[in-house]
Length: 269
Image (cartoon, rainbow, N blue to C red):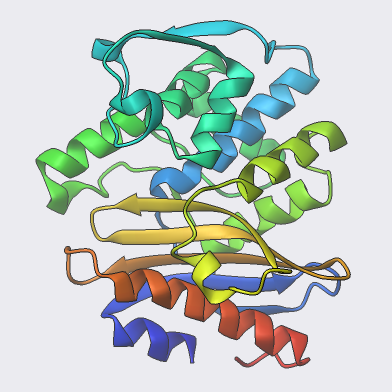
């Protein structure tokens, strides 16, 4: 069924839906690596949390983001015209809630750059590789969309779900930091992908989207009443470079199909 939903919108993808209590999963090419786009902001914040736990960075320390040296974007600091000074902790807030590129890149630079993020992920045995700042990826995607994937940070649905499992089990960093990351992801403003599949008021989706050229993603955890938790990663590449609302809604449909199958006790959606 997942393959059929992807084909309906002319897309391919990497999907994993896992019940956190049992570990049962529903998969579709779960180890297929794709450019992660803004999904990489979750690893950036996890890396910052781990370094803060060890006392290597102070989350309250301030940084200045100057217009001509920061990432462009449509929201937050990325879209502002004047210098902005904020803490690393507040940069994490903007990176995860409104997907602020400038905040994410400033935070990444403060903790050792892409290599520092990849190093922290390797320590967690999460096969996600950050290769470049977001500004480089989006500049390339804007100038030459057909080359947008070249050299981009990559990961698979299986790797993303592994990271989510660690965050939700308080194993990615200290319990306090993991709780904070979960709260930030629950505050994400974008609800047109995973959120569209779970409109019930008592179901909470804590997620992070990723968007670049032909790629549309979201990863997150769907929480039902009674602490029934499902980690979801839907990473997709569409044939048509023009964004279609159906593509976004299909990500929610895929997540819903996987979660409902697991709730029925089936490993086939």
